[in-house]
Structure formats: C-alpha cells, structure tokens
Length: 84
Image (cartoon, rainbow, N blue to C red; front, side):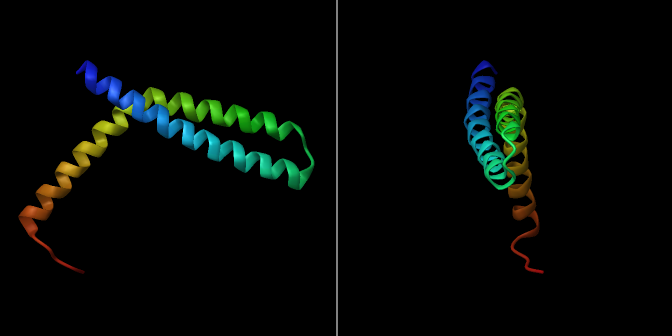
C-alpha cells in the first residue's frame, strides 16, 4: 500500500507540475495582453495550488484510473464490441 501511495503521489506531482506550467503560461499571456503585472503573481499562485493538489490527490486519481480501466475491460468482455 505504501508503494501505491508513493507511485500515486509521484504521478500526481508530475501531472501537477505540467498543469501548473500550463496555468502559469495562460496567466502570463493575459499579462502581456492586459498590461496588468499582478496577474503574473496570480499565475504563480494558481500553478502552486495545481501542483499541491495534484500531488495530494495523485493516489486517488491513480486508484480511479485503475478502477475505471478494470470496469471498462469487464464491460468490454461482457458486452463485446458494439458500435452505436
């Protein structure tokens, strides 16, 4: 269980870092468009929160991805390949 928590936290940290970069970049683009320099700090604030929350909840996200994959495979095996 400890390994699962570490893997989930590491995965969450990586995804949080990527999401934080994305949020920071979006806010800095708005800085140049509006000329408001305070938005750069808002972008950093959003990026830090995204990183912290992804790291904190990374294990839960990993668990739901695994459960979703298992459920998808079970449904796929039971009902077969049906197209709408």
